[in-house]
Image (tube, rainbow, N blue to C red; front, top):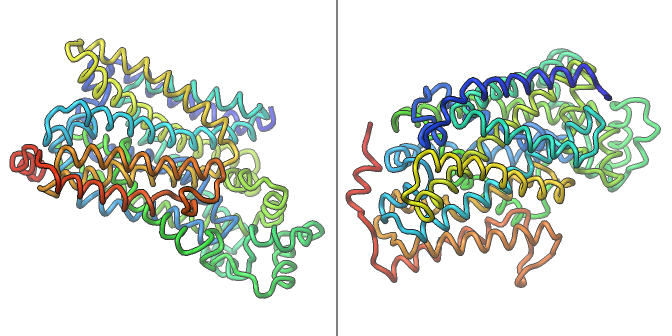
Length: 534
């Protein structure tokens, strides 16, 4: 074992998570308690759980790592992750709680009836999003355990998959929620600990000194291309930074925009995907059903927004601090083709640099908390959709409550296995960028479907079905085109996120098909329910 002290700290955090899930095992006997905790979660706990759920490995590892190697451009991910919560708060939180029960399909079905086509496409989108969002969490956990234990990547991925499966099957939504709340506190504390320690040890206790230092640093991705050999003989990170800056006087700094993405269209596509994506992420939306009222759902989001504001501010400072403190290591990793490791492992590497095994263990526990929190939320959301939208509504509408819960628990194992295979395939991808692409798919499917259902009276059943199918197809095509490193598709350049193509195309289909058809559903009745103040 490479780091026994760090492993003990991580093991303790895992045992706590298992205990919490085991404690709430009695709350998994009915579909309502297993899927949404019976709607009994206090809004403060729900808000912290949403924070823990949302601040995934992509945020804890990927965003800080992206900032560390490319500078301020890496923060686009964080800004997109954060900004859209305002839209969630004002556009969909209350209506979704009022009009839904377990899944996104429930909300749409309240207006258009329990249509099998709506259930089917909603379930497929939920499964696609959950699987693709699970992958970067498992990738991050795999690299983390590999660092701590020296195990093979495949072994660590399998262990991670088994752990999240056990947590969901044992605790259901109630166990998942309390675990997410605890894990949210852990990961926020870990990020703040890094910021304080880095400020004290390298910047005389002044965190704004990090910003000042970043103005002089040539980002590692630039240095790795233009002057990779200059850092090899440097006596310290500060000396390496000065040497590279002297050789590349006109190069951008850590605060220069435009380093990480190729051009304006890539920037725009990424921003669109991130901003609208949260409106369509099923593992976030399901949390509105775990509280008692629409008002409680909105208060939960307000609580989450404050937590995210603190967290992502700390992430910016920590990412730039990593760039300064670990500069030679980052340049060397990027120059030798290990950009994924540089990005995903930058935060644990900083923890080890600042406080040895003790800090490495605490940071690893924070990263693991982020991964477990998001993975368990995703798994229970996906299995809820399978059991409720497919099994209970289409395949076995006469099934008992016990049979539905049993089916959901079995589905956890299948989805975990699929996600593990994808994590092995995509192990060298930046976890933050993988999540960003999932946001693009959500922004092209559930986001417009829900906003239009809740706010546009002219929307029709045919329009919503066609729009979701087209949005899913286009976003998936451009997502996998990027995975396969294609430069163009259908004569269009493959961008860093599919949103620039898939959102407009999906919206056009939603609108045109709706204008050409007439089944608007129970419009007035639905609007009265959705927009009821309670």
